[in-house]
Image (cartoon, rainbow, N blue to C red):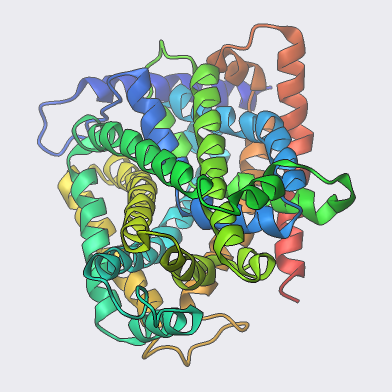
Length: 481
């Protein structure tokens, strides 16, 4: 009981420190914790983090692979229950403590400061290879705009598209150059801070994302044969439901909503006290889910309309779907060169908003714990990105001989962060908040007033969420055996 009171007092002290730091300091090396200027700024930035590569290639191929409508129904049900509870938990932890991830867990319970360091490993591992893929996206924008013959034209097909991807990624220099372009764009935004950088760019990119996505969706749905893809996505066949469908939907939700990546705790620490956490989380969830559905309505109907073997193409995952199969599909669409360019601009915007949030999660911790200036912290993050990102980039070329468990370096970083670390971080977050801190304090921070709602939240955080996360963890490990 004494420890719980100590934890509560530490949490209250952390809030005071967070608010004090938000007011700023005249000391040159003092950590000035900024904040979002409005609820809209927070929602757009957090939604931008959630809307990323996972929505654009992971959601559509999982939907196609696991029964279409049945997968979508499972995903939505999990989003409004399990996903929403984890999202509000992370945002509430951030706002209550007013700290980055290390300080936040120390504020919840002094014994668990070390867990914050474990959490920090997630964005440190993810952002370098994420920027490598972002660099690939930039290269494809250029290729479509210049009308590359391997992607556009009568000779373009799946073989030439695959050759273009293989030749580009195997080159030691081209992927590095485009990786640096994308990484520099990410850091350039973060350097300007929360309001002038992240919030401002989110208010530009998120509406642009919506406009581009809706344009592409309408264009694709007007093509002959696209209705078959729409039926695949929206008409559930309960005979397709298996435990794998539920597990895949759960894993996608976890990946898509930026859970267990330090992001929502960091953004929550920048959130105004008078903003509704539950209302904001609801808007983030709706935005993320809507974008995933629109992305699926771009990709799946286009594949069904212009591919001779839509089931096979739609089930392709990762780079194979986005960088090999989709260019071939776009080539078959009237005006495909420009549609392909617009699509990859859309992917670029989505990837950029996510990489910005990953970078800010690390920058926030460096500034808070080492009392660094923002520019210095950004330079350190860029250095980390250069080292690990270079390894990921060269893993397709000069370092392709390095193979761990049948995976190249980029795939290994992705597997370790998404299938191992993130479930562990989510489990740890639920256990620490649920058993070593007073969940009533978090419920108050969220604004939960009804006893039934508070009980439901407690059950989800203490029991349901850890079990679901353990299922993802064990399935990720089991699938590799």
